[in-house]
Image (cartoon, rainbow over all chains, first blue to last red; front, side, top):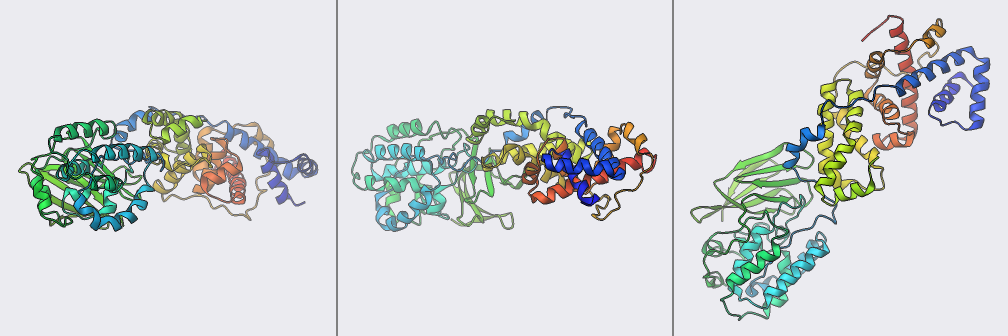
Length: 334
Length: 182
């Protein structure tokens, strides 16, 4: 055995990696090789010193120091734990036939990201409402719920509505996949009476209150939201909705949040400012301030575009598109 | 080190559990950064960045890996990538003559190296060798744990560690002789 090989044994001995036989070889060699014996002593001493290096502690608590930063960040949770908050949404029956096909496909894509419990909760809600309300009221429901799809509960809450209609020009375009589940029920219950608007809103907020406390209510006037709905086959459907501004579900203006489908980006609204964060980075990669309420943060399927609406005080609505390629924003037509 | 239950709670969205978890690991994270970077302020910065990354990425941790190697991977990556400084390190040459400076071996063995000398010697190692030494001695990691943390093959870990030791003892020997200091 060469000295070089023995030095490897010395090293392994320092790491308690030698078996008895190997240890004997090492000892035998060092007994007859003063150079190696000296080297072994030096390495042993070095190893001991390294093992005795001071167990340094930070001068102050690092966690305390970063807590303020963490306030503005959301941990990316386990996929199965990342529940999509499911709003109560019904869908106008007029649309259902036309869109049935694509819904069928979308359903499977969307469901993969949804926790079973939430589905159950959403289903309950949908079927509950399905039996009570007319199509026009479902519109207002859709308005509310569309705004509520984004909650700050989970950083990677992915937006089911993005799967349905990434670039729709109104809030009903944001009818999300949950509504797909309720379609059958709603089609059969068209002619119910209209008086229960308030009841329905109460019901909705009661059911979504837990999970979407930070959701922003879509309080736009219903006309603004319906007139230019491109996906509605019958233009009169929109004007059926005479119930005025919809009842706010959760008017807490705090936070709205949406992660891109691949989890790379998280868009977060705080007050009148939207930030886009890249996963794992502290500083935002994009920031914009707007003079209105944010709503309907929707990522495109390819993660390249985030579309959102600004509900102006005047009752109008503006739509913006952020491109993640260039991290620039442009105003979209609607 | 960290209770699996705490990790799971943190992963499932329990923010308090996640903060508790960060408190439990912050010293370990800091210690690695401190010895890799050999600078307190840089270590504070790197450790904080690592904790933030752990906070945001907790969901991506999978139990098939050890948690302690997962967090050490994060902090060593940050130290190596973000705080890479263009400073000279000693060359780690496999064929370097091992047996120089034989004289005075006994004197040397009796003396204790100054902690600062050891830190400076570690600082002269190439970054991956440095990281291997730090994980071995400051985190008490096994070869396999070091390999997992640094994403290096097992044999590479051993060869880095062994060569680092020889380099360190040579450097320290030089310091002791009043040679190159600092």
